[in-house]
Image (cartoon, rainbow, N blue to C red; front, side, top):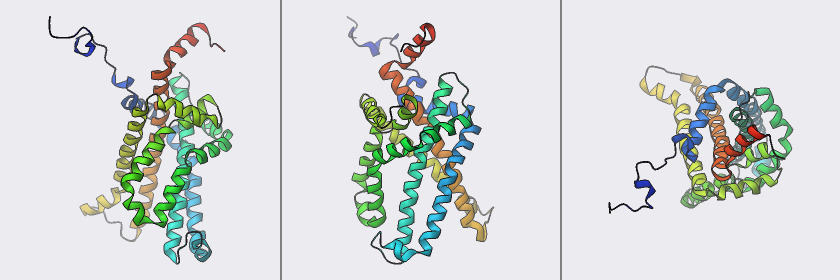
Length: 298
């Protein structure tokens, strides 16, 4: 007896080990970085095209809010410009959330085409998003209603929201994990509203990995956004650069650049996670190999 059980596979030197790229969470980010590197120009420019309406709408909301703040404040039970600012923040969060939903659809088209051996194009991705815009809107409303409630609580009762952060943050991650692959399912399998149920069933098979993926996206995305958006402040702190009266403008540009980098990267990683999930759960790679060898079975 050697002291090692015959069933202890991990103790044997020839035990199979998953490669880094085959791991659900880490492999998704590795694959996303590869796709982003190969198609950075098309992904960034296409994402910018989808984000322009978000930036314009945010600006329009701000102008309307400060012009008609009395009637606008009645929606939020506040008076004066504090209510205007709260309302503007609320709508900005919702618009950014919906834009991220659209970016997820655009990234899903790119990632799937790339991984299937195709040559994805920016025009093709934008047209695919435009064709499914009504369904994307419906799935966003049905899968993000809870985010609207949390945003309302945050802008109307920030003290309560801060006190409940310990409960709200894990709850938000939990709910996000259940629907994290809804957009890739919608764009790839074309199930309409049923994409939400399909996404939940798919995630439940590897829920721990999905939860970890959402946490890692939040941490990495938040860190990258914070670093890029705070670059002007860091540069001024060194004393080498002084922006003076245009400091607020430089800060705003830095924040938009940060969003333009972080949102597409997270969207590409999410699409890659969807493919990794289907490979682990349903053997998608084997199905595709069989289709190539014997023809697609319908």
